[in-house]
Image 1 (cartoon, rainbow over the protein chains, first blue to last red):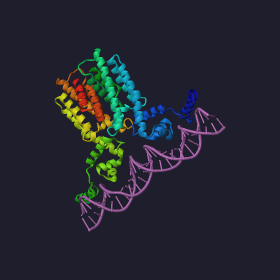
Image 2 (image 1 turned 180 degrees about the vertical axis):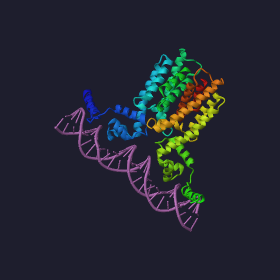
Image 3 (image 1 turned 60 degrees about the vertical axis):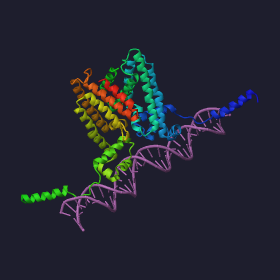
Image 4 (image 1 turned 60 degrees about the horizontal axis):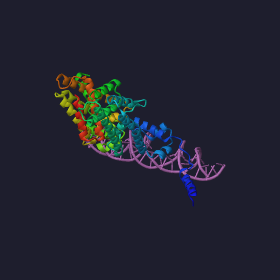
Length: 212
Length: 212
DNA sequence: TTTTATTTGGAACAAAAGTTCCGTAAAAAT
DNA sequence: ATTTTTACGGAACTTTTGTTCCAAATAAAA
């Protein structure tokens, strides 16, 4: 057998494996994941029965279970997707900031907006999830802790840069200020979810950032 | 009918109504309410099926439903009990404080301990409840908002006193500082529930209070 | 157009959750 | 001891939740 016939053989083989001719999914897997994520975000894990997910996505039962596994597996996937999209974007934003105090202001304001979206007062998905499932779910706990740590680290890096540029007082350690800011940010998400006035939120943001 | 016979008649009548002779409850209503409260606190409303409440309290189904109504009604009662006991005590503590910065330090440390009790990392009942049930439950929302407002008010009163005594800088409005502190406190409860180290919690408390 | 792997709609099912109901038990005044 | 009224134990029931299964539909390569 020469080289070219070997190649032909391989092609045939590869096509047989890869290029089957099944019915294709009539929906976009990631789009539906996003819809499920929004549901869980708004109503929590226990607050979202499968039927709601079917209604929201328009999927059939079999498509849902075949594609994503059981409800818990789906939930974990939506959490991971949140991290891969939203959290990553926030961290990139922080890491690319030049004017650090200004970036923090934007960060708080953007957080406010996200928690009070067109989807209704939904808070932060990660923080909602902590309150509903931690400490009884180790898998969820790990995901949120990683998320928290990554955010704290990004904040600390930004503060260090800000201090070097003279934008932020050097009185406190970057790590301490990062934890302080993260704490305030998490408090804010809860208060927004509870429905405080924008004025009060702005007051909190202003006071918090005045200490930098 | 003369007066004394009228009185006799009335006595008979009153006894017939008031002084019945039923079997008495074999449990203390408030004790069981506290047990239910601890369950809901640890596992949330949706995370606590009636069976768990029966197991925890030792009540029979009929006693549970006869005494407290359905699960939702019971939940609301536990929330109200939390407010009437825990929140009230906190507000009294704040109102009686002389050394305001010291009292705030104690407040934060006590909050840390409460969130990380012998019951496990349970966070704050009110804040857990916000995340699980708000904004889909108006009744719960009202209770937590009142709770939040009462706490903010107490903090503002304490800050005003502290400023008058020269214990706290007058740079910020009492109201703004109160909101700032409440926000930090709420952030802390979430982080404790997630399981941050005591060192980190102490760092957050220290940094937060350093700005007063 | 046949073939083939896969998707899809929806019936069906098992378990859990939430509640009601009823016969019996018990407290206490008479 | 009797009476009266409520508490109690637990069976039983309904609804919701979470999941599985299967026949019919379908995309696309050959």
